[in-house]
Image 1 (tube, rainbow, N blue to C red):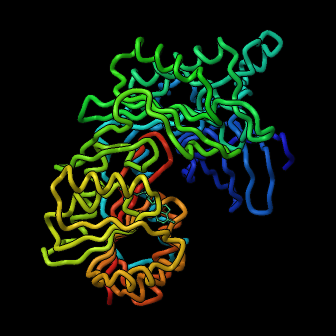
Image 2 (image 1 turned 90 degrees about the vertical axis):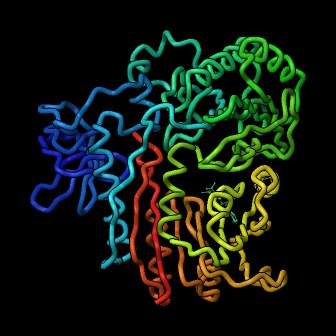
Length: 467
Ligand SMILES: C[S@@+](CC[C@H](N)C(=O)[O-])C[C@H]1O[C@@H](n2cnc3c(N)ncnc32)[C@H](O)[C@@H]1O
């Protein structure tokens, strides 16, 4: 077999990140943009000892699960990579992938696997979109064919292409957030492009425009536009004036100003041009304030299902002291507050702690205390210093990287009877649970939850008990 060779393959399985798998005499092929059930002619791109990577040259027989894509950016954007697969099959593969990582990475067996919870909405389900400005527009294969005729290749507003750090796909319509958000995206691009405002470049450390972040409430008429820039410029006021006149439904407008030469979409300080600088959202009976830089669940309707799954696993009796690790704006503590005695929340982002304090007042809660803590460091000195009661139950909902080994050791020292582990990355979750199981916890059950239809992201809830 050589690079560039064409080979006929039947796709039998699906790998994480949306690649089809074919096996011939024990040799494995990973084929980009193929689906189980497809018969294809594939072109070999990379050859390793036990496997090869290939791309589809021609579909000879389409999979019965193959459906028409709905987005024009499907071939370039890294977002909804599974949109050509039926939603039911997406769920099947997500479920199988969770089972696979728990067995392969965690070495875990003998626990219950509950069926994945499907998302009520499969399009326009996100309440936050973060777009990047770039001075290099990513060109599709079709555009590259007519390269000489393309004039507007030096300005883009959209999404980074996976693996290409300096180019951005110009997005006209994204199916993940509402039409209102698409209108603002297109207006913003035209406004700055026509005035030749420079995009910030991490490489040169020069330029102005970094990101456009849009947050929209599903339960209230709240709508936030946050422009992230490197430094300040009077053009922002003009932009917000025109934006406000054109889209009066925007309730708050913010300029996040960064002084760091990084690509992070968060400024060190912010200026509010319109409204309060916040939006409100609800999950279950709780009402929450969300600021420009604090984390909030991005599929708010499905977040309720996720929290309910965690609540069901915890099976509170009413007298528990609970630690909620990575507590964000206090949404989980407020969601469970009626069901437990007291909750301490631990979170490292200050604006999220501020939001949590406001959320306590908004919801008239008196049994939750948010605590600023960096969980990359040991948090037992903090607990001892504050004289906090030991927890009966710990809930943890870390970022994709999972928990720091120090946090895992702290949990083992605190030894709560129950641990409910929510994760947006089952691979790191399985890795962490392996350590907890080696130290005397038993994995009882898991429940995958689909928060992000058409993408390969999977949320998973796990229950562990002290043996
Ligand atoms: C997946 S979010 C979960 C937030 C919250 N449980 C929710 O459902 O909205 C992870 C949270 O961990 C916080 N975080 C990230 N790194 C952290 C660290 N080292 N220490 C404490 N919190 C951290 C983030 O700011 C974010 O709020």
